[in-house]
Image 1: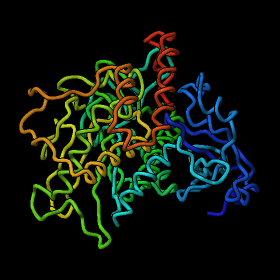
Image 2: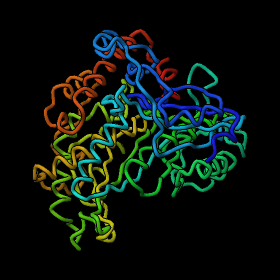
Image 3: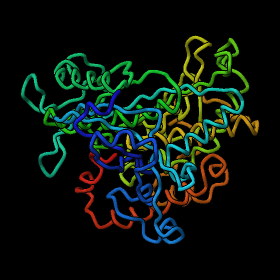
Length: 438
């Protein structure tokens, strides 16, 4: 894609909350991007959800708030079909002065994890299933959107309804066209069990590309919804009494010959599969903050809901946090089901895949798989509140082997500041902070 054809371009990196931070530039600046001529403070990578600097940040006091260098990733550029003007987005990654990738860049955290697989001659394939909710946010309280066909407000859920999808056909047609222009591979789109809730499944591909596309899809969906006089939100729990939004991650690992290392020809999978499961189980509780990164995220964790709260795994069991789906042995994979829709895809994939490769390298063995409903069994639980989740990830030794120590410290500082600031916002108004930021 020739950037000179656009009226303007955006360059942006993704901070710890998954938000784009960058600059608008004239298209004529395109030739300078690979030369490292776009700079931003390193501290921009861990501002809080409102964009505030982190108080007492080591990045400020130890480096003098030094600039970092932005360099294009291999994902862009992509058009921005939600804008009226002909514009393109160039995804960037953050580097320090000598060209080394910055440890606080969540995309780099995933890159570090994937390099551990690559050293073994392995390649991670991944896909995401993301739920989002269309809402009317024109008043002080969120409401379901107006059905464009009947011109009446949605009043009931309609799981797997084609009628509900067709009622919003103009929106979904624009969404598909936008995804095609951005080369985001949508596989399916379905109506889910919440009010105005839908799910998109993206195709299996390389794990870094999967994280890139999950991030870009969230931006696209929010932008296209605004063109149709709605808001699209990936908040974990838009309505207290309704279904929450999740993001499921499916992943498998192939060797240099393209053979799935989880496939042993049977339903149980290989020892590598068992070890990867064990790693994910070991890290899961301490990784809760990554799967539920915001205060309101914890409203989604309810007993008996579609959001797993138990640390366990099982074969073809959707009540388990980790599910090994059935089907052809050659497609044997792990489905990680705990994360909310409000996560940072790079951090989520880095945490899960980091735990999996750690489990393989250490040779961990998993607890036995569960049968029956996980909600009826006495099992370890995910963290149930924001403060405890922050404290646990800060001190956990296993997660520290999966993610850069400095990134964990920055993330913890960011979240502790958000706790203090969010306390000054009344609970009924907190959705205004998160609606389109997550």
